[in-house]
Amino acid sequence: MRKYYLILLALLITIMSYAQMGVGTTFPDESAQLDVVSNDKGILIPRVTLQNSTDTTTISSDLLSNPISLLVYNTKASGDLIEGYHYWNGSKWLRLINSDDSNGVVTTLVDNNDGTFTYTSENNTQTTFDADGDLIDNNNGTFTYTNAANTVTTFDAKLTSVIDNSDGTYTITDDFGISITIGGATETTTTLVDNNDGTFTYTSEDNTQTTLTSGSLTNNGDGSYTFTDATGINTTILASTGLAIEPWNGVDDNGPATDNTEDIYTLGDVGIGTNTPSATLEVNGNVIIGNGGTAIRRSLSTTAVLDFPDRRVINQPELTITLAGANIGDVLCLGVPPAAMITFAYYIAWVSSPNVITIKQRNSSYNPSDSDAPPATFRVTVFQY
Image (cartoon, rainbow, N blue to C red; front, side, top):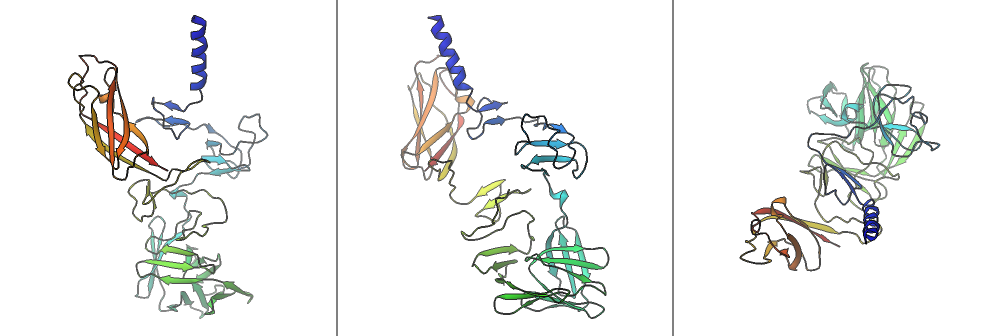
């Protein structure tokens, strides 16, 4: 008989080795293979000294190259790398950047209506330059600038960046990727002219002309602009907060935001369906989550303080929680607080009727000295498919 017990124990250990692993918690999140929980500790990423961005020898491995997504902290500037967190993308080491790494991408360029313009950089540094009556709004999405040598430059208002060259000139790059330099007495003259037929003509410094197909830029009157390209896809630009430097586009329909697969990252809160997120990620609407099987359409959650009666008075009592939108047959997850865990007791829950969750305290026996659970906060989450 003892041999059978040992065999059963070995099978259980084998099965458990494939479950999620928790560090600092006995209940790792089901969505994570490894869940680390701590209130006063962090995860220390390995610190190495990389030689350059294509270094494949510093990291010890039996593979011919570093595995994709490998993360390290480079401890010393070397070659074309600087100190900081880097990850391997399959061909080179890329550094994880933050707002301190910004290269001055424009946030806003505001006409002060007094002959001056104020440029606010991403770190809120403001620069005011005097147009001296020579920067003219053409009221068609373009501006014309005339310098001291009477050289005329026309540029498009759909800015992506303005860079101070520290020599009395500014380099402006529009959303077509075309750069022009204004200021000074001898800058190169280029023009981008609206042909009023849905196209623009760009004339380079050597008088080479290129016709570009474009859309329209509409002032929405609320501090934002809507750009419609030739395929009908709309992109909204918030002039009050500027253009984001992250590598993706914002669209308000089902058109593609980009032709490439790119990482999405942000240093602030992310809102989907809302312009004022109050959490790291706030979604105003349904969320569909899938992994090759049935997708989760949305989840509903609520909490309630429940006070189950003494089991010596009422055996296996039931209490209810109201959860708007819950339907009979929904999948349900019950969070039981530690205070409610008493000897020989466990809890089950189900959607007993629309909007009503029933929670039942079950027990096979009870300890007279531990038969009455104190009031405690229970959490219920319903998943709908």
